[in-house]
Length: 362
Ligand SMILES: *Cc1c(COP(=O)(O)O)cnc(C)c1O
Image (tube, rainbow, N blue to C red; front, side, top):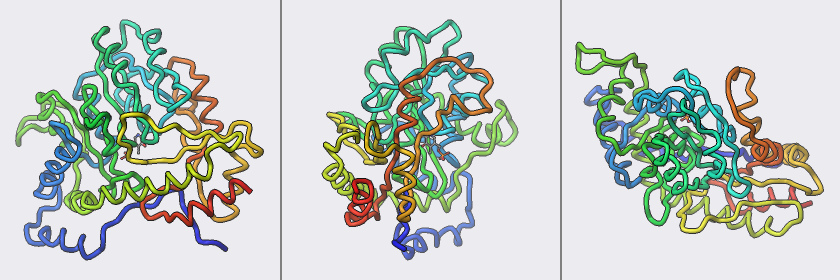
């Protein structure tokens, strides 16, 4: 049987380098809660992402959930169902109703032309998702937000390191959430951060992250526990050293996928976005009128030990746990039934990409 190829595989530094990085933890006995590794990673990320403020969290989901609380959002939030469970659940766990806006057909991000029709007097914010490494129409979204006095928080879990005309993606909108989960372009094993412009959020975010405490005796907020450990931060420090070459390896794979799959009847690839420095996070392929449908391609690949992913399927709006939501999203529904993300990670070889394409094209 051929070697297993998973849809993703975590980037890891040489083991000796990680050992070296965590040695000092045995000396200072500081395991968690804003230790020296945490502070170092936070500062490195502010620089790498080109943003004013970064706060680290135990994972990306909690970063988003806490951001929504800290900014004080209420009522309804306009978002898309073409995302991972986390985005919608972060809204629901803040007792806010998600209002689903459709996506556009080219890059699968929120269709900015459909936002205004969904705004009501209860709307407090827009939470669009940059998907697969594609960026949203940030300019148009900001214009609408300004016109109606709404906040904008981006789910930026897929766009770590991406830039628009040289500007870090985390500097758009009021805030963004990045995930550092094992499967993402950059990982801290589990972890995440938010980036934001309003300095007054710093203390609030820190406080909610640590049981709502502020100082030793005051508890001004109902918080949670969402601290990043020193071991995660150390992993992040090591992985950040390799981020450039990891993204370059991904890019090489994407170029090969494009060479092999472009122009095949019934196979639709995302166009490269202009002015964007991409991180090549995912390689989505839409099977629409191809000799096999999406599910058939997925099954065929699995027979050869290649594991792709129906991502994002199903839409979050169809989860049984969602009892109150609004908005119809026919484009998102159609794409979610036809899209497959193919294996893509830094250690994937060009030969592996060829093997995958041969199965799809045979
Ligand atoms: C991974 C992911 C998240 C959640 O991040 P975690 O770090 O796993 O909590 C949220 N949104 C999207 C789009 C993601 O892909």
